[in-house]
Image 1: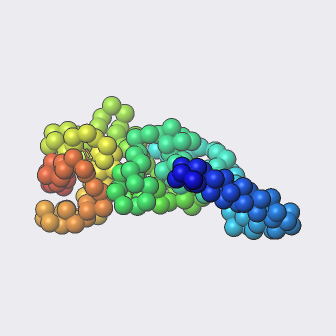
Image 2 (image 1 turned 180 degrees about the vertical axis):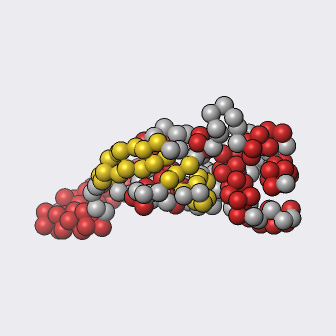
Length: 196
Ligand code: FES
Ligand code: FES
């Protein structure tokens, strides 16, 4: 018997044995596992949500598990807020809720009624850039720009919180916002400029 035939015959025997075993599982056992799966993974549930974003009120029906990040990007089409890691590690998704910075990928949309959300799209005053946006332009606070909306939202909060007394303090309080282009010097300079 050559190796090839031996392996294909053994494969056939194994596969047909497994299929026969699967078919032999009683229907009651199968339905037990289906019921268990339904209990562990509940079906999607929608809930009505009224949320204020950039001074506009929106009425929506959203999945109860929707994050603020997905609500902004998928439901409201405000794609300025970026999805980086989606796990609270990079800061790309930073927005303000009631004036304080939050990671929108870790914030459930269901917690938002009665609160005000501000995104990078709501920072400028019409055509007038927010001072932090202007400072990022002047101080080369970005390269590819992917992290920039989150950096700017965090930077605005950093100044408001008063964590700008030294370069070390700025770096510490901006450490949740990663920049893979390494534009950190320009980001710190932008914050110092606005904090003056
Ligand atoms: S996308 Fe939210 S922290 Fe990275
Ligand atoms: S500017 Fe490219 S990741 Fe920060």
